[in-house]
Image 1 (spheres, rainbow, N blue to C red):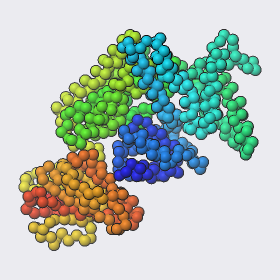
Image 2 (cartoon, helix red, strand yellow; image 1 turned 180 degrees about the horizontal axis):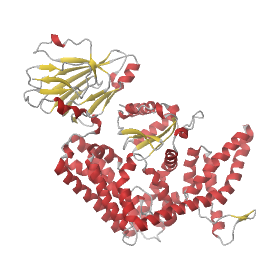
Image 3 (cartoon, one colour; image 1 turned 30 degrees about the vertical axis):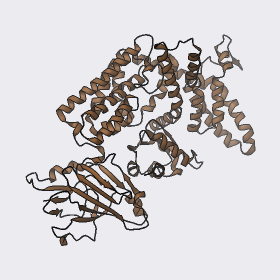
Image 4 (cartoon, one colour; image 1 turned 60 degrees about the vertical axis):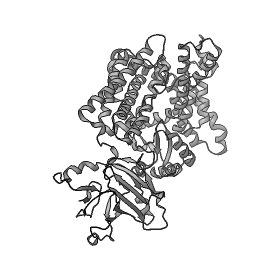
Length: 622
């Protein structure tokens, strides 16, 4: 399916363009603020290409896509044109306080991440170049690039003003102008001088707002109420002239006298709390946070740590809790996925685990978490144990990160200083990696879980199999249904002779095509109306899919879900949007017949074919 087609399907799945209030993306997922979350069709979205999972978490509807998220996001933004409709209701009105807080934090900080990560990466590489002696801090080229790397942090209030303006629905340019007041060079000189700045007998507190976070958030939040008051009492052409002036005159002084100092104090308190926790309970707090980090990622709540990290780095120059714990968790996730890749015999799992493991080692853990560890489960617990041990060590030595970027192999210079901090980072990496690897090997030796059939997309198909198979009969082969449906009225099984080609016609009521055995896809037509699959012991099934209307092109409603030609019993290998086809006035039928690749004497169809599903046998080969 073409990318633009399934972007259209994503929009349909979230309730249409008019239901989208805002959308942002992180490393692997789309995050939607929707007007009405009841309009979403999660089941449809989960069947789309590249979609790993979809769910509602922390005040947002999230779709995990993986490495293609940026491409999908750009296509999505072109379609919806980033327009917040005036008729949208407040999407947060139905959220609880916690979900509102999480949604606000993510919406404010996520858009500025590329600038922060870019500057952080550049700063990390500069530190590395100085450490290996390639450049000196007095070199002009170092000074130039150090200014470039500092710019995103120094003017952080201006970046946040833009993202806050979108979240609080204020004028973006006036918001940036207010941020410019806080970081204006002359204001900084006045506040840093020994002469107090007094206005109407009130002294403006001496606060440095460059690198700050919370002051500008409070300022733009206040501005949103001032703008609403202006909109209420000033209208027409007068508003164009006087509204910006009133906002600047009212908000700027309040920001300097109250919002700025209060926000700065909150940031200092947050940093002091982190330092207190680190100094007194570091080995416990880091270990527990590293242990639970996959859970935060799973629920899309790891972005809540942004303001904590920003405040800590802006106040004391480093973070010794959040990023070091993320580092331990990311390395463990990567090590775990690579170990599963090495141990498994499943080719499809190998194809997922290798790139997912490498991605996690470089700081993006979602592909490993969703593609490998949540499927095998035991590997997830081993990864959490490895992260726990590494987090314990990082907390014990107070591992510090001096810049806010995704922790991983490529960003190791973020831990460099002139003492032993970088050595501690290497030791943390080794503990996380090898404890995880050894744990998975040991657990796999005892349970063999790596090669067990535990794919989360199997919809528990295999749960009923042991109770159905009659193990006392060795000369028969039970084949389970690959589809959901009911027997079509044009079947006449009782008239088929034993030597004829056995087939059955089924009316589909669900669109999933499930693998009835371990095997391979032999062939598939471009129109997705012919599929031939073969088991490892030679049984061939031919699926011919038709619709009752000739005006419908089946390929427009079909999706191939199997990553490679290899599949395991219970895997979803194809999907058809049966509901949409029915909305267009047609039904979907599948004819299942046996190929010639297996030597059998006779076919026995299941007696009760009123409710056909992959959890029930369809036929028995004798």
